[in-house]
Length: 138
Image (cartoon, rainbow, N blue to C red; front, side, top):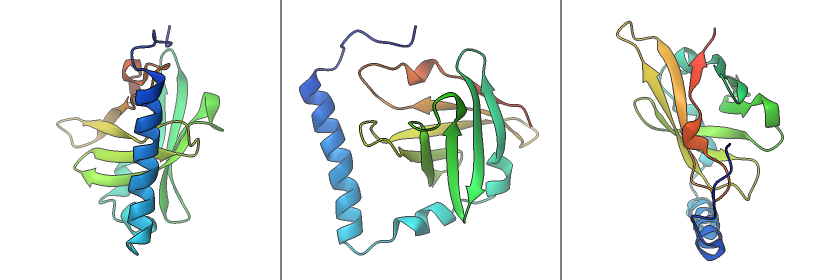
């Protein structure tokens, strides 16, 4: 269900992963502290909590030692990563598994200003992250 045909060549995937690595490396070599980005999330408390996708399962967003962390619980060893603030309701995610490229988490906010859920935008050759639709359960 979530596996794609090989729409992106292995060369493109490797190029994408190398690019992500070089972006992070250049950021660190420039003397910039990645952890500062993590702590600059306005209103972090509104994003924290448990979420669920009907097919994939549960996810959790929490503050872990001053860092915003997203964990997709069915495969938390692979899909746990730090969130970096980009703009209102948009975050960069870099997961612990170095073979998964960086992506974006986009939150849906209701008229009442409460977070309703989020979508995952990570381009990979073999998993349809765009099909996931996490809804906040608490």
